[in-house]
Length: 116
Length: 114
Image (tube, rainbow over all chains, first blue to last red; front, side, top):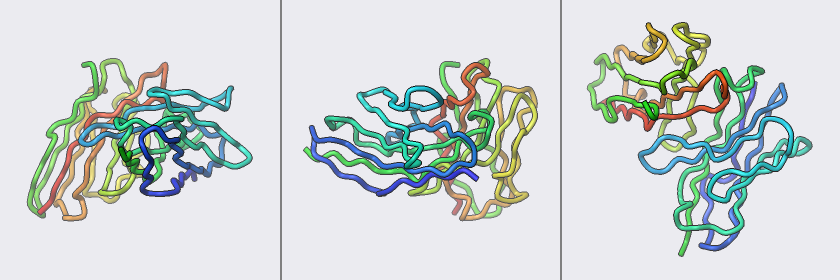
C-alpha cells in the first residue's frame, strides 16, 4: 500500500528564509507525487506534481520539489519565505497503479509558520 | 461550474441523526472523490466514482456511510445514525479524463455531531 510521511507537524521560519518541508513516501508502484496547500477554511490547492521525466519540478508561488527515488523523498522548498506562505501543506502519492485516477493518499500535513 | 461546490459548508447535528452532504463537481469531470479530514490530520480517502458507479468504496469506515452519484455529476454522501466520531471536514474533489491525477477540491463541509 502507498503511504506518505511528513516530518514535522509544524515548521517555523523567518520571512525571507529558506523553506524546507520534508516528505517521504512508500509505494509498490512507480509513484506520482504531489504537494497541496490548504489555507484556513479553504479547499486544497495543487502546488506542484511529479509524474515522469524531470525530477525537479516547479510549482506555483515559487515552490519547487525534487523527486529522489533512492531516498524515496519529495521534499518541498522555497528560497525565500513570504508571510502569505503561512498555511498547511500536504504531500500526497497516488493510491495505486492508475496514475492517480483512483485518487491520492495524503500525509498528515505540515503547518508552516512564517515569523516576521 | 467554475469550481467544486460543496453544501452545506457547516452542519451541526445531534448524535443519532441522519446527514446528507452534497458535492457539485466541475462540469465535465468524470471522476469524483470523497475524503474525510479530521482535526490535525491529512485527508483520508473514502470513496471515488467514475461516472455513476462507485469504482472504489474501500475507504468508507462502516455501513453507516453511503454515497451516490445517480447521474454522473452531483454526488451525495449520506451518514446514518451519526456518532460524535464522525465530526470532521468532508472534502469532495473531481478530476477530468485528460488530467486524471489532478484533483480539484471543494472547500469542504464541516460536520459537527453533538
